[in-house]
Each structure stands twice: as C-alpha cells, then as structure tokens.
Length: 291
Image (cartoon, rainbow, N blue to C red):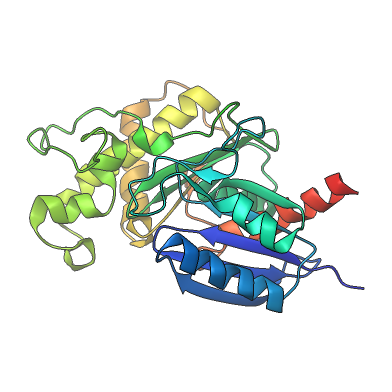
C-alpha cells in the first residue's frame, strides 16, 4: 500500500497544504488564507482528514518554539501577526490527527528541500519577501539548539546612500529585514516594489544588504551553497546584483567551493516548492523514527 506524507507550509499570508506519495511528488494540494488561528487550523485539519497521511511536517512562520523539552514546544510565540502569538499550532494538529509530526520553521523546510534536491548536505536558504528569514543545514541537520536561527534579524552595514532610512522592522528598525524586505522599497519610495523600474538605484541598495547576508553566512557557516528565494529575488535582475555586491564585499577573503553563479543561486524547485519537498522528506523521517 502506498504511503502518503503531508506538508503544511504555514505562512503569515497563506497555508499551503499538500499530500505527497513515496516519491515525494505532490498528489493533492490546497492553499488557504491565514486568517485567525481557529479558522485556519480547522480548514487544515479538514483537508488532512479528507486526504489521510501517515505522517506530516509543518514549516511555520515564526518565531516558534522548536525545543522538544520546552513547555511551549510547537507554539508560535512572539509573532506580531494578530491573534497568532503564543498559539499551540502543533498541539492542535496532533490532537486532531494523531499521527507523527515534525515541526520547524518555513525556511528550514525550504533549506531541507533544497538539500534533498541538490544533494548538498550543507547549505543556507534565505527568503527575501514580505519579511526575511533564513534556515541552514549542516551535514544534513538543522543548525540551532534550544531555538532556531533568526537570520533575517541580523544587523548589517548601512549603504552610503541609505543612511537616513529608519527601517521597517518593528523590533529592530534597521536589521536586515528592516532594510531589505520587500515592504522597505515602498517605505522608501511610496511605490510597491513590483512597480519600481529595474534600473532604480533602490535595487542596488537592496542587493547590498542581501549580499551581506550571503557574506555573513559564508564566513560563519562555510556552506556548499546559498539559496535565495522569495518575491524580491524573483526579479530577474536581482541575482546578478547580489553576485556583484557579494564579490566586492567579500573581496576574495576566502575561496568559494565553486563559481559564484553556482554558489549563490535561486531555488532549484519552481513555484516556491522547496518547503513542500522538504516537509515530505521530514515527514518520511518522522515515520522512520516512529517505526
């Protein structure tokens, strides 16, 4: 009998629910808006009751508690998203479905999917969109001990032409997310990013901050590959800009494991499917642990 695995990519805007077969191919999927917790989780449970799986993995927006020894393991914790702070997401799902579940961040799930697809056991995945998040695997395992990484909130050096911009992060103002997430473009110019011309100087400012994320990851984790996903990096001109800024900032201090075009890349899985693939792999491993 074919085993089916479940994936929940729990985003702040939408939940992407999917069922995959033993080859990790999607056989059914559904997107639902992230409204209030009760409504969103009820629709999620209904989907998996109608499409039973043997195990599932959740990659969630955060911050979340990923420490199994914590009293709030499985909770979404200090998120600014209204109604979701201190919500026991994993507990609600386990009580309703009673199957083995893995619980991690959405970017960790994406990193795992890219690891599975590329065969690279040590890589970093950043999403540059409404917010910025980062996940990493080292030798096939997530980094972090009592908590998960919060790479989007690291501090970066200011671009010389951007010193007067306050930043949009509600916690830190001018951390990486505050300076380089998608909404920062509109905060600077009064125009949404998708309507800003590709030759606008703001994109070089964005690339400067994004490239610093890659430099910091290179110097701290020495990964085999860095993957940038998310809406900002979906623009064709951005990856080349990041490459250029990265080379200037790193200044040949360390050798890269490959050409920069192979080292700093966009996702290998189309349509933001990295997290779903990663979740299928994590769900399969959960079943193995149970057995």
